[in-house]
Each structure stands twice: as structure tokens, then as C-alpha cells.
Amino acid sequence: MKGLIQKSGYIKPGNGGGHYAEYIATREGVELMDAQYPSHEGSGYLEYMAERPRSHGLFSADGAADLEQTMEEINAHAGPVWTFIYSLKREDAARLGYENGESWRRLLLAHQTELAVEMKISPSNFRWCAAFHDEKHHPHIHMMAWSADPKQGYLTEKGIEQMRSKLSNAIFQDELLSLYQEKDLSYQQVRDAAIEAMGRLIREMKSGLCDSPVIAGQMEILAETLAEVKGKKVYGYLKKPVKAQVDAIVDELARLPEVAECYEQWNRLRDELERYYKDTPREHKPLSQQPEFKAIKNMVIREAEELRLSTFTFEDASMKDEVDEDQEEVYYAWSSRWQMAEAYQNAKEILSVYENTEEEKAGQVRMLEQLWDAGFTVAAHQLGKCWRDGIPTLPPTSMTAMWMPTLTAGRLSAAG
Image (spheres, rainbow, N blue to C red):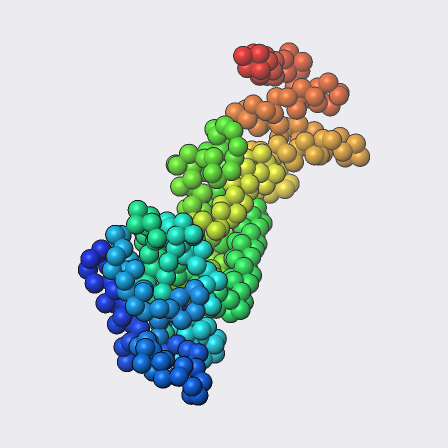
């Protein structure tokens, strides 16, 4: 097991807390606390030999503890006393300098306020004692903690986990810092891989040679759904059914080899970090269920929204084959409104360029008329502009019938 091992329990009032303190302070293998012995000369040494306290290894925030006094205080305590064991592998203890009681005492002293907070005890009332046992493979300490006010003190599973986390961060500070830096870099690689993959898919879908038709279809459905969404179009504001669409796209992206490889590396580093704090292996969730990667979800939403607004549009593989360019009339078949939007956008660009020939512009006018016939009502506005600018199009009466109802409906909608 990696990192700091923690075990916890508690002793109810009157159930032998003082005897447990005596046990951890005097059992075999305990490191005895250093004491200031008097000089061998004179009567002081004889008095010390006659009255000296028992040798023990109990220490507290102030150094060596008074075992008898500590036992009396715990036995008289009217509240619970919590017990902890903190243990390291021998190689970790040797490498990090935790092979003696004084190192552990300084660690607990430095973090006693944080430990008190997690135990719901006022720092001024927090009391603790501990003893170091230099076991061969797992040097460890036994710690006891309680409140001077018996009404204070409450420890949850989360609190226990946080206590271990605070101490682990201090013990393994340098190597944890390195791991966190690696994890942060790995996060960026996952995010960048997903963004690059989406960009590549957009280009492929636009060319009609997309290797991921599932994602192409999902993006088109999401874009259509977003057209009905009011308010902010970011993941946190979407309703559950729309979020589910976004999640499905993210998980499809995660199956692409370049994204899957980066995500696997991120999970490996995350596992290594969590082994410092937890004993049970963490669950590897789908990419869409990792809160850290919400940026990828919002990237998918942005791309779908741009698709809806015709910034990016895709050609379906189901479109009819292109006809021979020599044909006088070109038959356009649209399998989605997004392809109509792309054709409309292209027509607008060609018509706006003064240098383009009348023949080119006339072709785009015919395109706009076909879009109108297919139900793409926005084309009426552009056709109206063509008529206004003198570009040959339908007769004025026909034009009025086409775009005036649309314009009138738009004004009524705005007024409402």
C-alpha cells in the first residue's frame, strides 16, 4: 500500500482509555522519550532513582508527556477519546525522515489545528498524545485525541479522510507536487486531443469523407436541439436531455485512439495520487462523467452552436452524387437544413463580391430560389436584396409574394 496508512477508532467514557494510553506508551518496541537525568553526584540522583517515573514513550504537543497525569485526565474525561494509527513503509519512513518520535511529534504539532477542525473541536480545547513504535516493516505512531470540553468532538468519514490527506500532503510534499504537475499537464493533453480530434472531424465531415459518422450524426442532432434552447448555451445551464446528448458526443470522442491514450495516462496519474490518500481503488468513469473535463463538453456545445449558425456545416454522406458539370441545370439534394445553410452562406459570399461575373451571380440566385422552394425561408431575404440591387431574379410580384410574408411575420414576432 502506498502513502500514509491510517486506522481510526474511539473509546467511550469509562471504557479504559487511560489503560490504552499506558499500553501504547509502554509496549514492546516503543521509542522511549529522552529525559533530563540529574548528575550522579550528591543526593539529587538518589532522590531521582527513588522517585523516578516509569520509562515510557508517550509524547504530546509540549514534548514528553506525564503518563500518570495523562491516564488520569483520560479516565476522568466525560466524552469520547479517538484513537488513530499512522504508519509508513520502512523505505518511505527512512527516505522522508520519519524513523523517530520527534519527527512525528513535529508533524502532529504543525497540523494540530487542522486536525482539530476536522474533528469539530475548538483548537484551544484540542488535546492529544502519541507514541512511536519502530516496527521493522511499518514504523508507526499510536495517537489519542479528545476535547477538554466533553461536549465538543464529532468525526465523520469525510473528516477521517481529510485528516489523512492533511498529514499525507505534509509527509509527501515534494513527490506529490511533482505528481500534481504531471496530472495538470496530462489534463491539458486530454483536452487538447479532444479539441484537435473535433477539429479534424469537422474538416472530414465537411469534405464528406468522415471516419466517424456516429459523431457527425450526433453533432447535427445537438445543433438542431440547441436551436430550441433559450438562455446561456453552456453545459451547466442545459436541461438533462440536452446534457445527455453532449455527454454521448464526449464519450464518442473518448473512444478515438488519440483521446483514449491521453485519458488513460490521466487516469493512471490520478490513481497514483489517490493511493496516497485512499485504500480503495478509484473508479474509472467515462470522460463525460469526470467533472474536471467540463471544458470539453462546452467545446462540443460551441461547435454545435457554430454548426447551427452555419459557421461550420457538414455534408452528409447520404447526399446524391454530383452531377456532370456540363448539365444546364444542377439538381441539388439536401438531406438536412445544415446543408441548406451551407449553400445559402456560399451564395451570399459569391453575390457580395463585385468582381464575380453576372453568370456566377445568376447561378447563386437560382440556388436561392431552389432553397426557398425547399422550405429554407431565410433565402427570401437575400433574394429581395438581389432584386433591389438589380441582379436578375424572379419578377417583382413573385418576389413580393416570397419575402413579404416572411418579413411581416418577423416584425410581428419582434413586436410581441
